[in-house]
Image 1 (cartoon, helix red, strand yellow):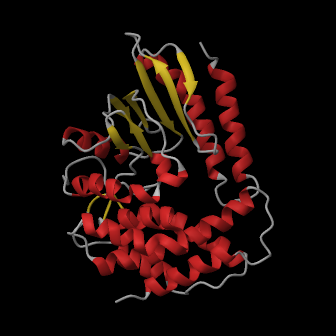
Image 2: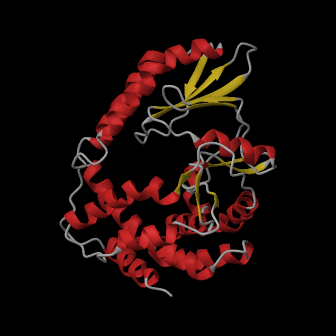
Length: 313
């Protein structure tokens, strides 16, 4: 049995190391991981969990716990514990699983005092970077099915702009600190395009590390459970896997699958996401203590393409 306490302390260390240098931008995450750690022993006792096999966190300093454990019957389960409230993840993931979307069943969950989920352990691997752009069609098929499922009485929905607005402002502030030029109306345009007249449940954080490829195919994990335009999930995935050079082409492949989407709205959201990717690129430099004064070609391309797409009508 792996010792839980050193593992938890290492997770705290990873979060502290990541946020220490980034201008205090995500300093609240240092408290979040400590709240998760403080709660995990009580939660394990409440759920009757025993043996810890290993930590499933990727080692990137996320302020959450992801633990492979054994339940009272000796079955492998995954316990995910946040240090904050994230109330709609379990509700939306559970609904999607019940409706046949390729995700993972939620065995139990709660939001007191922080949010947590208990899931069965499923085997699989995170897709390799070289494989990710070619996966766009497969991811679009899964999300097209997910986007058709909406129940207004499920969970505690949070609109997309409320969910990502703080992150948007944080990463774009990093771009400004590093003396790049961004459009002055980004936040207002984000509020406009993220508040859809026909919202649905979104994943909200589509990236390859939130996918698992196993014997049964591809599964999506870690939904944020926001409500907003389905075009956002397409834009976020394509910005992340396509970068400045391939994002527009990737979006075209997605739109060929999920044909109900509005192409113009998808392009505008893609532009916004490329601006955010530029900001993420710069804030990571701060987190890792890397130099940023020299102009970054990819950051500049992301900002240029993003601004052009953001003005589409």
